[in-house]
Structures are given as structure tokens and as C-alpha cells.
Length: 245
Image 1 (cartoon, rainbow, N blue to C red):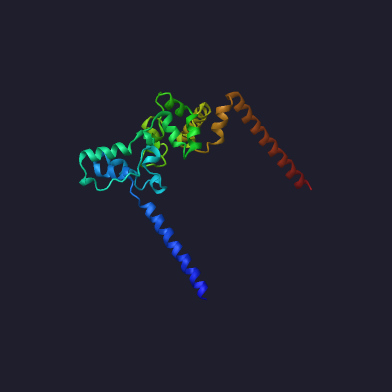
Image 2 (cartoon, one colour):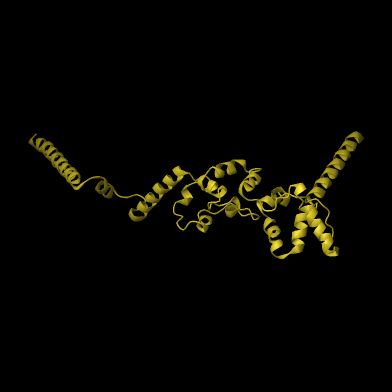
């Protein structure tokens, strides 16, 4: 019995130590967050937007995208001189630690594909992705997903930033716009326009009038009348024979 209690005590102690270490690691201050919050104004806005975002909840911090050293000890910024703060900024944003600032172009794609390789690969091969890489007006990832707030864009609302006409956008993959996608979108718009004017399930008469000429329609109508006449005649003969018996 004493051995079992001793084993449980050891296990519980190990659990407390590991849990305390994990909690300490999670609460470790991030130099980027601390400084930007202290600076306030527009410089604090990225941190405000980042907090509560999907990246924040997943533990993706500033240096993952911007590079630099976020582990330096900042301390109480209110007690530091401007020269000391400048030295901390220089150390945290050192190019030797991979600081890139605001990535753009291919550097932006390279940064995003560290976690989103499939999405970046698909988008970079699309018409919009190529337009962005060649500086021809295509959107960067952060235009639709935001840089720090990180949201799943609402289609077609987000598309209206660049496109006046967003009809049919909810029926295509905005991450993979190709020549085939444009043709598909054209067909979708024609279908939606037809449904708007004729209803989702147009009657048979409009379909016939659209596909057949007046001669064919008249011929079909004559055939239908002839069929009904013959059908009626057959019924009449059957009943006459029945009455004769």
C-alpha cells in the first residue's frame, strides 16, 4: 500500500512540475507584443487585432511572420531611456535574426506557405496569384485574410473591394481562378440570369419556344391534336362495340 502511495505521489509531483513549466512557457513575454502595446496608437493596432485571432490561439506570434528576436528581455519600458529603448528595438529587429519587416511578393508567399503550403501553391498558380507576383494588380493573401486579424473571408463581400460585379462568385473557388474558372463563371451567370427571369424551374412551353422554330412547334401541336383525335376515336369504337353486344 505504501509503495502505491509513493508511486502516486511521484507521478503527481512530476505532473505539477511539467504543468508549471508549460504554464511558464506560455506566459513568457513576447518582446514584440510588449513594445508595440507600450507604444500605443497605430503601432499597437497590430497587437490588438492579433489578440484573439486564429494565429494567436494557435500560438503563432509576431516573429513567425516578421522574423527578429522576440525573446529578448524588455523589462519595464517606462523606466528605460530613449537610447535604451532604441537599443532594444535594434536587437529585436536584427536582420541577423531574420527580421524581414512587412513581407511582400514572393517573400510573403514563402512565409505563408510554411503553414499553408497547399493554399499558397494553388493561389500562386492562379490568375490572381500570378497578377500579384508580377505586380499587375492581383491581391496578396493579407488583402482577403487580413494581416493580423486573420479571418476566413466572406464571399462575395470581400471580393467587392476589387470587383464591382460579384454575381456567381459564391459558386467558384476564389483561390483557384483559371481560364476554365472564368468560363465556368460565365455559364453560372447566364444560368442565374435565366432563373431570375423565368424562375428556378421554367415551364416546358418556354423551353420548346426557345429551342424550336414556329414550324416545328406547329407540327408538334398538330401531332398532339391528331393523337388525341385517334385516341378518342379508339375509345368511341370500343364503347360502340360494347353497346352492340
